[in-house]
Image (cartoon, rainbow, N blue to C red; front, top):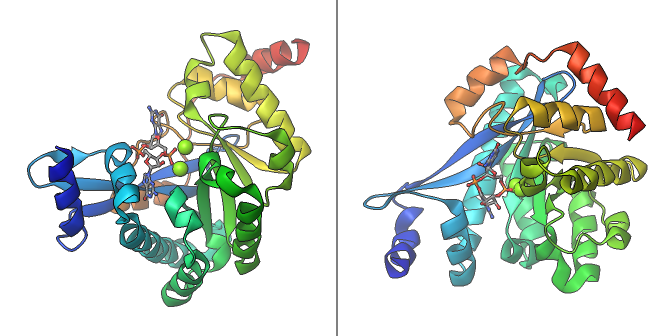
Length: 278
Ligand code: C2E
Ligand code: MG
Ligand code: MG
């Protein structure tokens, strides 16, 4: 299967088998869609839909991530530009794009981002690059330099899957990022066990103190939403609001502008009190 995937991946790009889906990122208090995350999909001719968790590591090993990553960036920027044009700059739509370790470490990342922004006409502040801790950890000093250079271009930066790597507090302070995305594994079990909730609360408080935005990933139900709201989490994404969808479905979501989830105000206040007391 690995061989089949590897040879298939080589021409997936030219054969048009790769596409992007977009998952909305919302302001948790208002339900307003303030951005989206581009997520790659591979429709394999015989194997069907292959998950990025399976083929991105393979693309990393073979180096195919370089052309694939460049395609993702370009495609996502074109889409973001078109939504900004359609819905107006005042909506401040931000497109988040994942960078794998090898992409982040590649010599010409800066040039690629600069050229892609220029060619697509997307303003730099409309792009947020998501980087995992593990992609930075090999050489923290070099990573900080690179992130500063990206930041100088005007793009936004996020630490993805925070909490699963080293999660060093000392270096979170030094990373020039705008956003921390709390890994979904914590959000998943938050309602069942006390420790994950304590960890999530701590990360949120830390981010507030450091003046960073926090995004809760993988919100699947109302309880998780209420808990995160009570803890003061700014942004969120998850199946509870929407799964990753194609661009035309996402466009419809943007037209309605808000994904409001009904929750009763009493429960929310009660929860805030409980958290305060704790
Ligand atoms: P990620 O960047 O942390 O993306 C979030 C993943 O969580 C996505 O999986 C998304 O579909 C999933 N998700 C969102 N909400 C929920 C939820 O409520 N419940 C559950 N169970 N899952 C949820 P996906 O699309 O399969 O992507 C997996 C990973 O593959 C991504 O994790 C990212 O690391 C990588 N990836 C995806 N697209 C790209 C890409 O274009 N380039 C690179 N380098 N990596 C990518
Ligand atoms: Mg991500
Ligand atoms: Mg993540």
